[in-house]
Image 1 (spheres, rainbow, N blue to C red):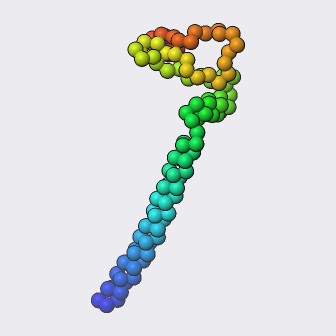
Image 2 (spheres, helix red, strand yellow):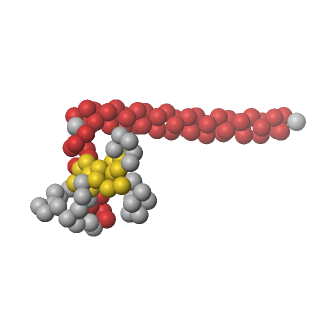
Image 3 (cartoon, rainbow, N blue to C red):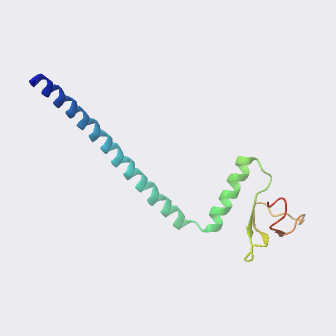
Length: 107
């Protein structure tokens, strides 16, 4: 009976040690995520929206091997899509700056 209790005690102690290690890892992960959040906030404070958007367009263009990249946003009435940002502005406008929302390319 004593042997059975001692084995159970050893098993429980081992479980406690494992749980302590897991809790320690969770604390480290929580602290790391907090630091990442703080760093992200600082980066966002130092950059304006246009810089972030331009960087996104550049990286998207590189990743997808595009010649150009553009952002189209719906207007207030949601009837048309307006060109708001473009990576490389076309010297000759080959397309309109707004297109209907029900255009097949938009759909």
